[in-house]
Length: 261
Image (cartoon, rainbow, N blue to C red; front, side, top):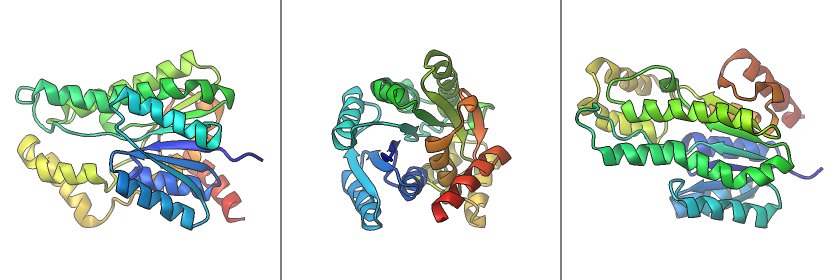
C-alpha cells in the first residue's frame, strides 16, 4: 500500500512537531513546514533516524509563494498529498483593540487565516485526487472573546468558518477544525511574557498556573490530530471537535492499537 503524505505547518516545535512525529509513527510521509530552517531539518532528521520518512521545507505561511513551493516540493518528493494540518499560527498582538496597531492585526489575520487558505488552495488538486483531509487547528477562543486577544479570537473564528466553507465546496475533501486545548508551546510563552500588559490579571494568571501545574504537554493532542489527519471519518466533514472528546479518542485508540500491533 502506498504511504499517505501529510503536510504539517508550524512543525519545528510544540504541537506541530508532535503531530509530525505521530504521523510518521503511523506510517505517513511527513512534510514539516516552518520558518526556522535549521531546527526544522534537525527534527526531520530525527524522524528519519527513527525509521520514518520526513522532508523539511522552510518557509513562511503568510507568503503565497512559500505555500505554493511547499506543495510543489511535497509532490516532487512523494508524488501525492493526502492530508494538510494547518497548525502554524501567532497570538500577537496581545492588547486591547483601542491600543493595538492595525499592522499587528493584519499580520495575525494573514498568518492565522489567509495562510491556511492559500496553502489549502494550492494543495486542493492533490487532496481531491486522494479524497484527502484538511485539519484546521483552531481554539476555544474561536467561540468566545478573551480581553486582549481580539485579533486571535477573530482569526480563529474565521478559521472555523473557512473550515465550514471548505466542507460545502469540496465534496472530495474532508475538513475538520480541532480544538487542541491549552498546550505548552511557544504561543504560551508569548502569553506569559506579554500577557500581563495586555490582558486582565485574572486571565493572565490562569495561564501562569497552567504552566506551573505542568498540564500543558503537546503530545496527547498532537497524537489525536495526527490520527484525524489520516483517518477522520467523512461524516465529520465541516465539524469543530475537541481533541479529547470521546469519539476522537475512540478513533485514536483504534489506530494506536493498529500501530502498536
